[in-house]
Amino acid sequence: MEMSITKIYEDIHSVIYFIETDQPQTKKEDRKQRKSSLLSKVLNVDENALQLGEHGKPFLKDGSRFISISHDDNVSVLAVSDINIGVDIERIGEAKMRIVKRFFPPSFKDAVESTSGEDRNRVFYEKWTIIEAILKADGSGFHRDINEDPAWIFNWKTVSFEHEGFMVSLAYSN
Image 1 (cartoon, rainbow, N blue to C red):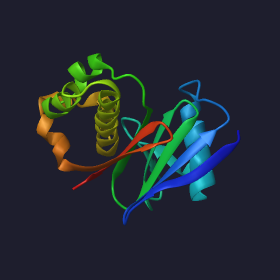
Image 2: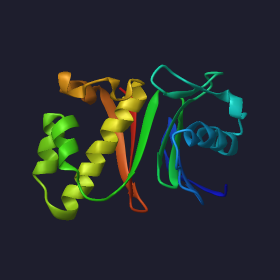
Image 3: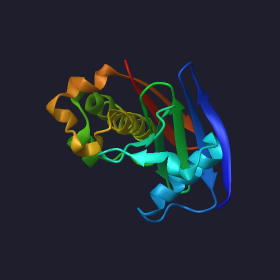
């Protein structure tokens, strides 16, 4: 598998790499292999250095750095940090209002519903990737119902930006 790796974000704690491959991820079984391959190429660690938490959050066995990985088709993002993080990437497309109604806390729902057209699509994907990045950072994934305590998501700091038609969000604890 051919990979193109570009650093697309850096702050005092974290770095995000954008990885394009010549093959889309086609099966759930490909995830562990792709994660191991990314870690090996980007971080120079052995493929056995990766372990998964209770809800699938990846971490390095030696605890040297926090990592988070997200995929969409043939692209991935890998976030590496000295603090707990989560990252998500999604290709920007049409806003999915059924997701807004089911998963978005009131303030996020209002932000999407108050826009239209391309702005709505961009705001939807910004808010959706923020939610997913926070759930990844927390380690709970969608085992947590954020609508039970919508204010919980504001305990996280987030950064979102567009890159080559994708929305990328990084979340880390306050």
